[in-house]
Image 1 (spheres, rainbow, N blue to C red):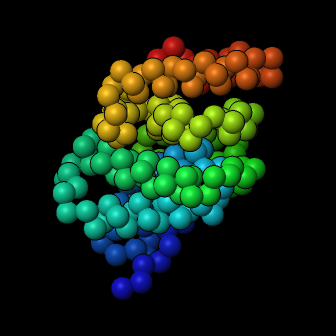
Image 2 (cartoon, rainbow, N blue to C red; image 1 turned 120 degrees about the vertical axis):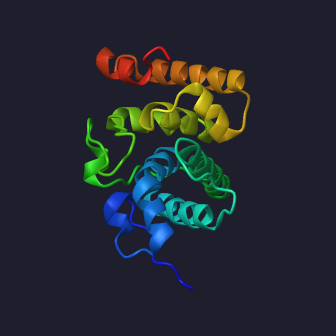
Length: 193
């Protein structure tokens, strides 16, 4: 059976036309997977591929928990793995090619269950200079609003290592942004967590 590709925005619009459980997964998690993949990969086509593959893999996963938050974390674990696989294969970061809705400084992606705001364009551009795992940690924490313990579950890494990686990545990001952004914008991303 050939499945139609999931649109970049995920959410309810993406679920229209998709069969049963796959449509429900797209509605619930498509937007969050798109945010994560877009911030890490910074390539629209690659991010769309991650959304599609992650949703199909989650649909086929027999041990997927039935309820949130465990179900959400399991789907995001799949998305992180797929995102890092695509990033390793491509090895390059292209200029950010996101829809205007996503690229807005304070915009949010419709249908995002976490209401995750995409960082301003300068912050996203600075993130491109960080390693993929650091971009993923920042996206999980600040765009998808996971706490450090949830990030540890998603990445299957010790919580202390996740916290250290996140802290180091935010410090490098803040150093790059000093002088180029108003301090309030930096604090949104590096809010002391």
